[in-house]
Amino acid sequence: MALEDARTQVDLAFTRPETRGLAFENAFGGATSFLRRRYSKDLAGVDLAITGVPFDQAVTHRPGARFGPRAIREASTLQAFDPPHGWGFDPLSRFGIVDYGDLAFDYAKVADFPDALSAHIRGILAAGPGTIALGGDHSITLPILRAYAERFGPLSLLQFDAHSDTWADDDMARIDHGTMFYKAVKLGLIDPARSVQVGIRTDNPDTLGITILDAREVHERGVAAAVERIRAILGDHPVYLTFDIDALDPAFAPGTGTPVWGGLASWQVAAMLRDLAGINLVGGDVVEVSPPYDPTGATAIAGAHVAHELLALYCWRRMRG
Image: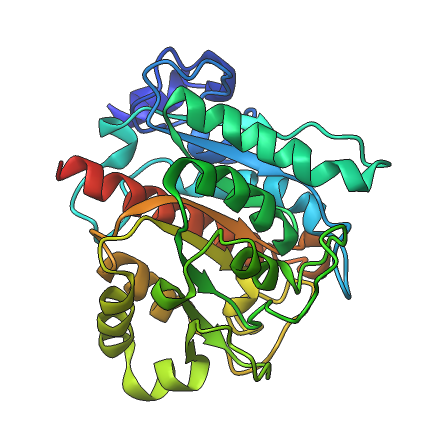
């Protein structure tokens, strides 16, 4: 059946008749959407919308994450043939999932960007689905959290990252990919007592009450201990999971703006995300994939795998009712 489908399926991003099902289109051909999902603005009957946010004008060092959504979509064509490994179910066939396309914004009006993104996410949430955003630099998470907090109240933040991104910044007009979680705490968008940052390996003494599991702790105590501690802190509270690709060591993901050595290995991340099945995930993002700094494409491949795992994590709890 898969071989026959491979002979006939093409451009499923536009020709797919439904929102469910695996895809057997040749990975090297056709129009690229995330996991070969149908591009659609029609959210009727949709459980989850993937959306791209190609914005990188808040970086402190190397730009290029504006190309992240496109690269992640292309890399994901390698993963559309099979259910995600180790989950024991097929979220692509059981749930309605679409690629909602990218946020449209005026690149020359940077100050207008956060409100545009909040409105974009707000519109999707109002129609019913959750979202997984493909960034873009990490500043995109703050406008997304604004929309989510309007719906769910203060959220638990589960952040995989090399940096805490809680450096003090009381100028709410500034757009900076290193201060947005300071602002999220100050604005009451996240509950620091129920939030966790994983993989941190840069110094910022003021944690704002957020629990930090730095990379060394994960390496030395192991994945199981990390997952146990994360679960205890999150409880059953609504969780927004943001994954900065620099949580991974540069050996696994060199294509990012601010790489830091000593990071998580890809197998550790895969194991943690799968073992977190059942948390009350309401949305998430994958950010800081900067393809110009990785000619191998490995970083985009890692980003696509993370986004696929977030999709499975989102669907798992809903499958279990």
